[in-house]
Image (cartoon, rainbow, N blue to C red; front, side, top):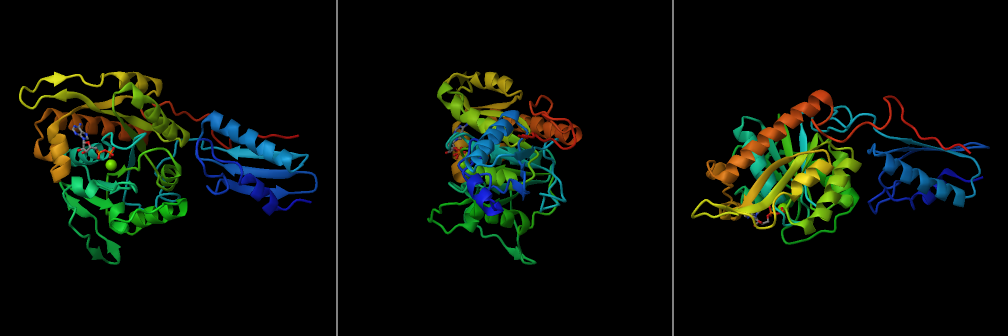
Length: 371
Ligand SMILES: Nc1ncnc2c1ncn2[C@@H]1O[C@H](COP(=O)(O)OP(=O)(O)O)[C@@H](O)[C@H]1O
Ligand SMILES: [Mg+2]
């Protein structure tokens, strides 16, 4: 008779759809029960997308058949409601009311710029805001927020975030040795994230904005799984060639059952600093279609503006230093839309026009394969 370990070993060959990590490594295999005439396998995933569930079921079936198991029962449990900040389960930082993940399909699109300016805009709107730089590949929030040379203080065995432009900031960069690039494995990311959430004195926050690493790999998934995410924001540029990357990023949110609060179209047109006139450069508007496709909305179209780049380089974010500029006004407006969506999600469990719906009725949702 087969042992549990042998079955587990085989299940390590089943990767989570869209990722390179296996369902075993993600900790999704919850139970394996072997009796004389039946092998029972229980999987618990964080996505309620039916195609993810189906794909996993097919893959697992194949593997169990390879082991020559005649009769098995695969139960795949999915969330019946979108994940909410649940202090008793995932939220190890109970003072933080909401978590917003800002992601992009690739680097260089203005993800950090957007996260920093949205955080400041939220703070200017009276919210208590934290900004977590979780971009392990290029943690550049400290520079953008003008705190590059500041060292966080330690208080009661906890690291105090650095207050900058009304926002409490902490960066993954402070956990890394300068100039050393690390190859981040899932376990390391989890440890770093746990540290950044648990061992940082965030205090009470209305929202923690998280500047995610670019892309949609294991690092992002690990992060998303260890933080009770309220909503996701996707940053993109309007070129048609960016579409595929952006879709992957939006797919990731869907796969992880994260409510998409909206898309920020960055580098959307150019505002001439002399005339104030706006020019279309990359072809605005592609994001509108994308938003429709994903049942979400465009939070803002931020033009290419030299002041944005200068503000980022010099640690003087435009929203704070030029609040009357076109771009700052758009960040402020976007932050209001974002906040409205967060409130809506907290009240109703989903964004106003989010596509994420429970795919099964409340209670245990299981797909059972009995043969
Ligand atoms: N709307 C914009 N106008 C002008 N420069 C911008 C704009 N958005 C971002 N930048 C600049 O582009 C570069 C990349 O932006 P960044 O936020 O670091 O991207 P990411 O975090 O996605 O890698 C930075 O130098 C930033 O100042
Ligand atoms: Mg960045």
